[in-house]
Image (spheres, rainbow, N blue to C red):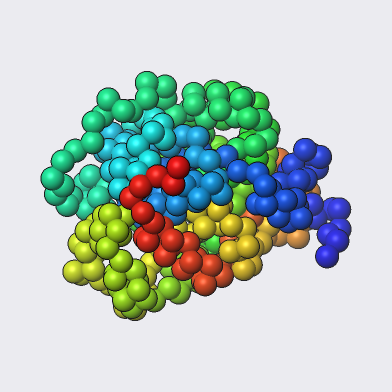
Length: 366
Ligand SMILES: [Ca+2]
């Protein structure tokens, strides 16, 4: 379908990004070119699964992970680094560089009253050994995001599965960064005002609303949002499939996730639904064919509000997508659509990537 030009999102006004939006060109990329990834993570349990999905694709040479950066969210950035190393070691990828990142939110430090992933992000389960922290690189997240995108302009897919603090800092540190990123996949925000940490707020956006606001305001490439509603309401993967099919796998990757998730399974509140968050953003990043339905929106993030701080706001008024209502939004986002909200995934493709992630060997595929 040829879209009317007045509905084109702002990134499509820049010719250089046309190729990253075009499915035909994606097919070409998947056929011969190894896509480059940076993954920014506040490594909780769902981040660990998302990382395993990416690492399997890395080992299969579908993608190349250039850097893993940690951010404070589900746990401290410090603990997130250790968790990343544990995941890397489970699948034989110890050489992928890991970088530290923001220790707190941009403006208002986030105070957690409930530790859904335990205090350490990995449900406080015990391990026999601990990876060597000397493996953490000296360079910091926002610097490495900027330096790698300078090295590979227009080539890097950025996947953010935690609060957007590092990404916002990187964009603020170098205003040219948004033009160098190929595409961004974010787990965060909400499209129907359904919350998980506040009545109307999703955790990653509420943990650092100013960072989410900044990234949505400055982004200049196709920016995919995997919102809480996709995880909670529109993505029905059965817990019984998780337990019977994935539960039967005993690779080191599967054993790691079994151990982490068991804490939740002992007191599971979601019935026969296996709630997935970062995994949804990751499968979309790995394989666009997994996106069943998506909608372009002009989005921003509420920074005030007694109850609504951190809520993602979609401007659905007539004229918003064409960029005609800039003044009435206080110039928060210039132009029209700035995000693509993922409304629904192909569950069979999501399951395929999850199964590959759990089933992968603990050895590198070299
Ligand atoms: Ca996360």
